[in-house]
Length: 223
Image (cartoon, rainbow, N blue to C red):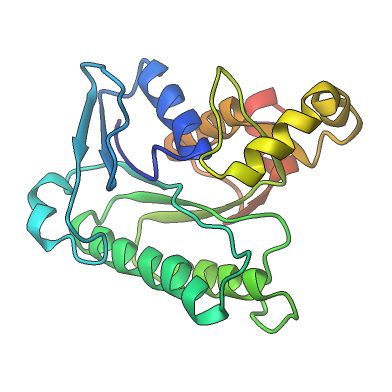
């Protein structure tokens, strides 16, 4: 497979990139983003466009891919709905529309979040915006599109969040994370498992477009 990854320097993206580079059936991985990953691997290439909203200048490097894993995201804390929508809905759709035009056979995977509001009418701002984003992505002419809604994501293999508040939270919760994973298996997933689930749906598809943590864990556990 040939795979595009957006947001490979974030916590989720780092985990996804690791699993893609380790997968025997992945022959090429291209990372698109503003920052370099710092990873060296013969399968890996990186593209750093000046403006992610307009990828026309790098179109020749974005066609011929089997799957795209969109892991870009920002916290809504302290943001207005307009500002959050600009970096969530507008940016995601700008990228996805260009990819759909260039890759008719592509599977597109979007990392959303547990609690996303498909009705787009709820009280929680981030959930409304994520729901609107999911709905718009599902209307695009990809071969297939999947919305991943993980709950608590546990970083593995030395991966750390770029967000300070999340790093503090994970540091505090580190001793109880294994217990939480055991007690709430349908709500907790690791970065490793998330990456493996993305690869699984790229290979074989999934029975539905919106996948919660319990659904994602089935791809990894083989159930």
